[in-house]
Image 1: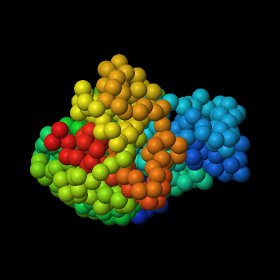
Image 2 (image 1 turned 90 degrees about the horizontal axis):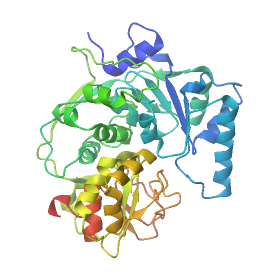
Image 3 (image 1 turned 135 degrees about the vertical axis):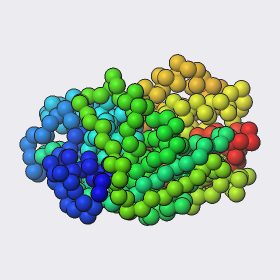
Image 4 (image 1 turned 30 degrees about the horizontal axis):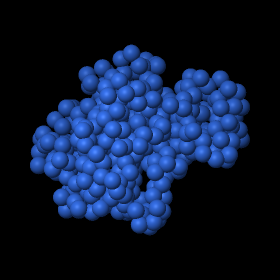
Length: 415
């Protein structure tokens, strides 16, 4: 019987012919990543077990959650991380955007790689055919010290997305719909493997959006098998040799789910659960105070472009503040070059520095009591972006822009 992509990849990293779901393996790691939220604890744990990291070239450190620092405490953490990088000879130190956008741009997210990151949305790198998963800071310390870590092999679920997406329906709508169907804990510790015509036609950014929110269903990882589009993206970026791994034609999955999405409408996740998903039409008219466009889910150039198309030559509703945060410096520069930033700012948007600040309510875009936000990010938990008395609706960049324009939740097909 053939094996799934996740099983083949973990078998290779464990030095075995094959592995079975449920088996515990000690797997060789290709890349480990920490950010400024998880890094300080990882460094403290590392010092208890080792003196030197196993391979400085495969350790990536990123300042993104509170960058630039907004308090003395955070600034102290950043100094600690900079000193650790210098001490350990870690040259892969970045402070130019969200870790889940910067790693692919810098050529660390590659097909056939095992990537561990101390951040729950590390599964984003599955868009490149890697097994990528979030781990705790102490596990990251062990991976940095020894270059390997134990993992339980997950069972795999094949998700086939068939049909053709309609006008102003995007990958974000697809993944919100799937989260609503499967549930926040419906894929706990499973490997989601995406297939189908819709996935084949999806941009790399769309695939990153898809995999990014796999964890919102409890998945251990989410993977899109590598293809020519993957190869085109990583060529010229790849830091290391890589091997494309795909499932066997006769692979056996724990479950196969097939979705026909030609009639899918724009979706929205309502407060305060990511799986509380409805078509935008069912909640349109709800007045909003803030619209946030950015994050590791939807802060890429193509996302900003879709919003700019809707807002070009128009003005954001006077009651609404719209925050736009490019996912990375590369995205920022590309959007500037294409005139996207100018269109968004002329419409009334406020531009923030690349990073995670608004998504996690750490220092820009903090919501006050009773305020309502429509956000292109990936979580709408109670208090996620500020006051626990605020409400967060998750949606595509187009729905965010259309809602900012009208001052209320709006189906983007109506503007």
